[in-house]
Structure formats: structure tokens, C-alpha cells
Image 1 (cartoon, rainbow, N blue to C red):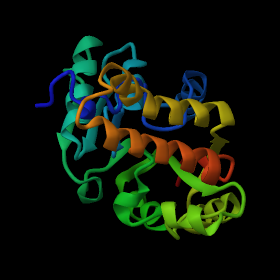
Image 2 (cartoon, rainbow, N blue to C red):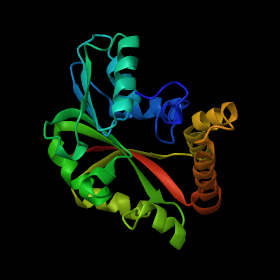
Image 3 (cartoon, helix red, strand yellow):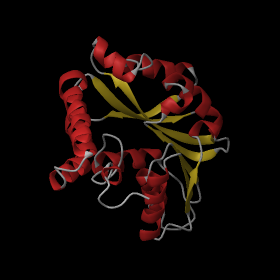
Image 4 (cartoon, rainbow, N blue to C red):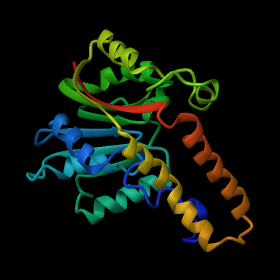
Length: 244
């Protein structure tokens, strides 16, 4: 296990969720998801499952249950701790599995920033259809090109990213109905990128002479330069509540 002074343990320390999202926006998405009491909620590629925990925790009857699926041991451990802190550990389970291998259907399915597990957005939209029960809903969060990308941006994010119009039309062609759509605004993006760096930036300030500092400093500087110079305002992030 990494120590508290290990930079790897600080990677997500300042983040509420690993996606460009504010609490106000999250509240809207959960409202549109409209999770009924007693529903089963599954979050594929959950990380530490903040949205999952909020979706389950919103049910005052205590009958809604959730499962978070991811392969990141540290994130799953954080999710279990958060669940225990909120007295949800009897209702929310975190499992170490590949998201793409999940086969059990749910009433409400969450997949935010994890379409790469199926090979891209198009493949995820096809595969996830089999995991939503009749009358259920899918909350999908995924990247899209807000403006035509440069070659460098395409190299960073791969060729599978679509413009928003194509993403919407592809979902519609597969039989999904768009019950809600909203996109991350610039403040949400800036906060996401800043908090992704912040835990390790703070570690660098505490340990400037550590043998690991130079390599980490370079990594964080590259990420900041790429964000500001390559994909800020070019890569967008959209949230959809989809039904079939």
C-alpha cells in the first residue's frame, strides 16, 4: 500500500468525481435519471462511485441498492470507505471486475467516462442496451468534439471521438431515446483538470527534492500544457439520460 507521502496516493485526493461535473449539474442528472425506490443501480467504470452513492443515498426508504464495477483497487477502496461513512455499505457493493464483462441488467445504469472499456462510444451504446431492464434508463457520460480537433488532439484521445451531432444520431439509430442531454461547461472542465493535478501539485510543494519529483513535475506540466494548448474548448463532455 502506498504511504500518505507517496504521490500515487494523492492522484485523486482533491477530486469529488473523475469527470467534469459540478454538484449542481450532478443533482440535475440524478433528477432526470429518476431512480425509483427499490431500483437496482449499477455503475460501470465507477471509480469511487460518487454518483452511484448519491443515486442510492437519495432513496429515503432504504430499498434502492447499487453495485460499482471497476478495476482500480485504490478507487474501489475509497468507494467502500465513502459508503461506510454514509451508512450505505449495506446497500452499495464495489466489485473489482472489467466493466465490459458485466452481464447483469439494472433498472438504472451509469457509465460515465468509461466507454473505452467497450472500444469506444459506438460499441458502448450497443453493448449497454442489453444491460438496461425494460423501462430502465442509462446515464451515459462521454467526450465529444466541440470544435474540429487538431491532429495532436486526435492523437491524445483517439479516432473514436465524435462530434455531438453524430453522437446523438448514433444513439437514436440504435433505438435509444434521449430523455435528457447536457454538457459540461468551461468552469466544470477547468475545475476537473485543476483538481486532477491538485493533489500531486501539493505533494510536489511538500517534497521538492524527492527523487520522484522531477519526473512527476514533467508529467503534470505536460498535462497542463496539453489541456490549455490542445483540447481546452475543443473536447467537450456530454451527459445523456437514455431510455429504450
